[in-house]
Image 1: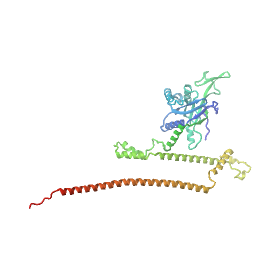
Image 2: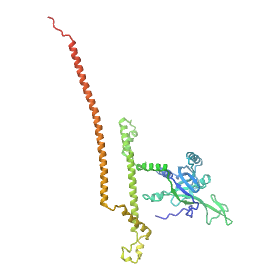
Image 3: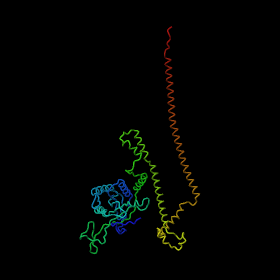
Image 4: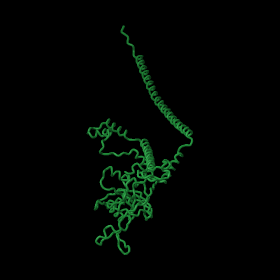
Length: 428
């Protein structure tokens, strides 16, 4: 990876002497990630700018909430906050988050890995002059996301504080100070102070409500997909939209077909949970494979050892080995790898045969319980089927008996009519 040259606005003093401790909450990360995702997928123009709300207790600063901000153009390609809109939205958030009371503690945007640039200074000065003198800047680095795709480690973001430092070899142009500079008396001479950004350490802090929301997002993200407008719609989408697009009337059968297609494309909660679990396991396996490949690459790039090459018994490494792309031996890393290898047998049982028998017995018990469950369910289904058959058969018998009684009643009426009718004899 190429070395990243810091921006001229980043302070040369790496460590912060202010003592500020930043506590970053997951809801801020979710808000920033959602805003960047929507901005990218909708192909919006302009910078991504938002405000950070939290609490400032002494040297502890918490970043708990965030929201998007409207910006207006300024000189030299810079942007500023829309003053009226921002003050109204900030007041609304203060009214919502009264317990505990949250206030403006900083802002966020996307920055390159080198740090803040000149166009980011006006909006930061606007915030520290009008709202909070100790406002921090949360910088999200999209280039780090692409470079670290599929790898774990540090989050692709940096938190800066603003300080004023005296510039070296700085003078006044025409005897006047430039805008944005401050002056101080050093050895009887006035020198300008420039706004610089210094990196701050931060830690992740999570509450119970945030844990629930993060878990919900993680579960719902198992079947999340991004749809590109330029791609061709699927056959199901075309079938469901065809009657409306062609202007033909939607009949009952077509509505049932559209509903069936939509229902077939919707996952059940059990399927979503299964997909989420499988995705998490696949990511874990992929991460493990990446780490193992990294260790293998490092070990294969080491120079030859005297343990495997008799010509290096004196510990002398040839010039050819040092110039063939082999890295210098780091014994601390090698000791860590050796300790990891020695810990691997702990994961395997001492008695493999007994472990296999125990695993087979547990598997058999689980299979037996599952079989008993299926048998119980089958018995219940058969019983329900017998009850339904009994109800249907009883209804048929009652209907048959009713028909027989009706036939007997009709025959009795006909017989009674024949007996009451007088028999006519011919005249003699």
